[in-house]
Amino acid sequence: MGTKIRPGGQIMPFVKAVSIVSIGECSEIAQRSAGTVHEPVVYYMRMDRLVKIGWTINIRTRVESLGPQGVLAIEFGGRDQERIRHKQFMDHHSHLEWFWLRDALPAHIVELRETFEQETGHTTEAWLASHGVRSTAIGAAP
Image 1 (cartoon, helix red, strand yellow):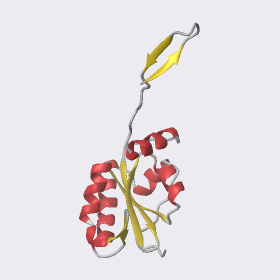
Image 2 (cartoon, helix red, strand yellow):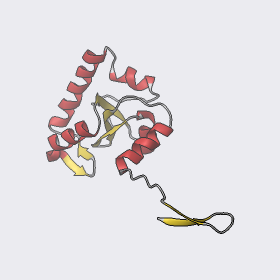
Image 3 (spheres, helix red, strand yellow):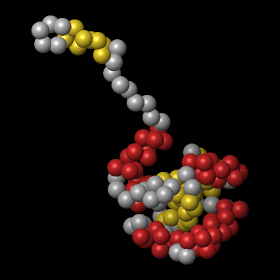
């Protein structure tokens, strides 16, 4: 609570409104203000032998900020789905949201791509291209 002096010397109390948002909400707000927004997706972005598993509502902006070698796969879902995948691949964990591209993870990515095409009628590449992003094949050299 603070005070404000009005013309004529009258002192008026006021309360400053404060909005508290989480870091995730700040990220979502920034993504929305950056342009093209789509439903939340969990992405699998490759950087050498690592894959970042994260989520976004603006895949193009996310790719531009991370600069990966490509997007291997996407699946519809947000924070909750991302957390499920992080737990699922905990044995592959490197650091933060990065996981080693080995063992069960490559097969999971191939399965996601097949499921995405069956469910949407679009390839991962076509969906990404419609949002200004290129993808890369799982077996491509880093």
